Image (cartoon, rainbow over all chains, first blue to last red; front, side):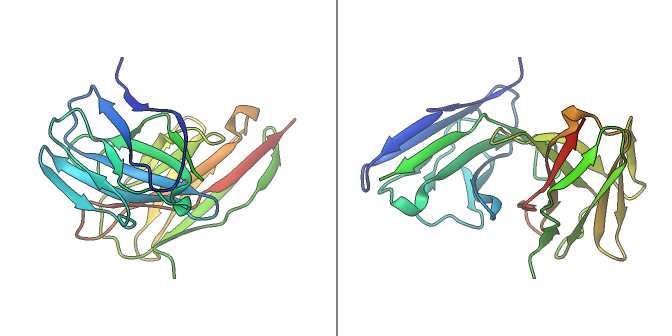
Length: 113
Length: 110
């Protein structure tokens, strides 16, 4: 079954404790991206990747890191989480670029205390 | 001005009604735009792609007006299961980035 998986689905952590949210897709897509969704602000792109070892900033990259060592995986790293990073996070993958259908993971609800 | 703007709603309509949403955009020269559907706090899923010639899929019709920079979504014969938030998505000009509207909420009642 074609899918995008994210883990964990729910996470409560404390300020400053490094965390990683994993994302994996089995559709051989080149394009992957991370979004955060906040009430009244919609989905905002954090980072995206056009292919292995190629990543670029989205609109809200501050406080986040990503890596793309393998085509299928695109983890999101918060080196020192802060309360303003409390949000709902979605990973997505989509063909060769932004113009292709995007398939989203189920989301990760992160709370930073 | 936001790059992608949508009326947040909610649109409350009875079953069987026809409802239309608009989305205005700027800063895009893309050939294709998108409507995604999002159920409460779940992942967005593609509803329709929108091309210059428009697109129709059953009860759903999407149209693109480049001159006025807006995209529309028409839902005919609304069903209870159409209740969701509809997101307008626009590729940003000269980038590989996608811009999402904040969504329009639809509530269909019996």
